[in-house]
Length: 223
Image (cartoon, rainbow, N blue to C red; front, side):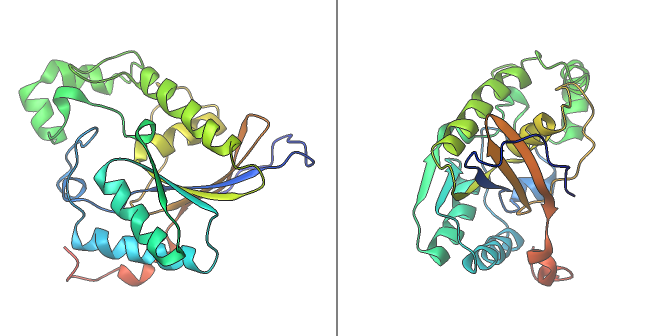
């Protein structure tokens, strides 16, 4: 998926940003909310990380940033090793903190906490799960961090390995989608999403590229 070019001054040095969701984890496979907690990469996830590394090896970024959570760091490190780069970990790039909801499947959440399940699915951007953070607070943490990183690397190509919620915030900003609007996009593990950043604007170039993962399809040994 691509988006039309916005009115960006061509003389302004752009930052080319590849935003990648981490590779598949055990909790991804089980349908559990991870948030600020972690779970190991599956065998498929490890293979996805290596496929991602191969995709970037031919055209490496100048810098690699990552959330400091294990699932993102392991994914980023696979690329870094292949490209001969270091990973710059940034806590601000963590997934939204879901508090007491973390570790639960949707079925478990609905059965144990029907009131919280209803509040969560109301998409109220100011709803704070017990012990967690609201979508609005999440946005206020993530977007300035991404813009600061992009501003520091004008004219360069950078890779940021992070989480689905983080990548989704940028998508929403590009398309002017309100925080409470239903999600209308798919975001696969280890997918590549390419953006340009200049003059305080994000521009979507490519969404959901999974071409590098095609050789993993149908691999029953990757569980």
